[in-house]
Length: 186
Image (cartoon, rainbow, N blue to C red; front, side, top):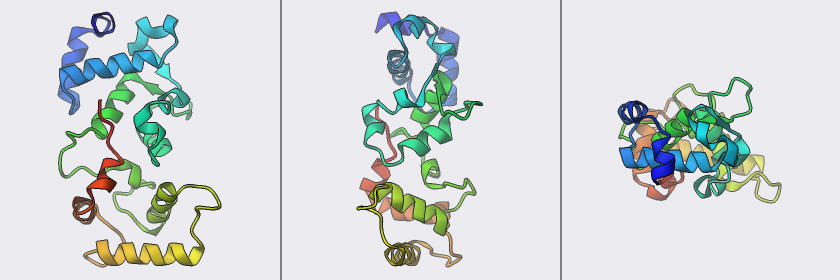
């Protein structure tokens, strides 16, 4: 790994460790993976390059993730709106969905309107992501309403019509397979 790791400034490595939930080794591996998504001629400047979303989505961990587009959207700082990622965006994504993510952290891809709770619209989008977007896999309106009602009955402890962070954590703690769909392991 010597070649790609040597292009990551030592002071930046320390800063990245402080700002993420990733170890030094994981950051170096992330840098290597990020660099490999760039054309060969751009790899030397990986710290200042942007990788197109289409290349990010080729990562095996995202390819099969039903939240792949939402994850890219949440972590991209692209002003062009193309969801391309800088190395810092890439690190934030990896840190945000890492196995080391601390308790008390809301999995961002599920809160589609970014209001801090999951309401009926968020739940509908969540179900659509999990079941697929095709006509053959799409639930009918009645099925969707019944499913959302069941989710709220089981998860909405305070009965306010939304699922807050602590309610979501309670549900996820009982469903480790669901929680694992957000994680990218280096």
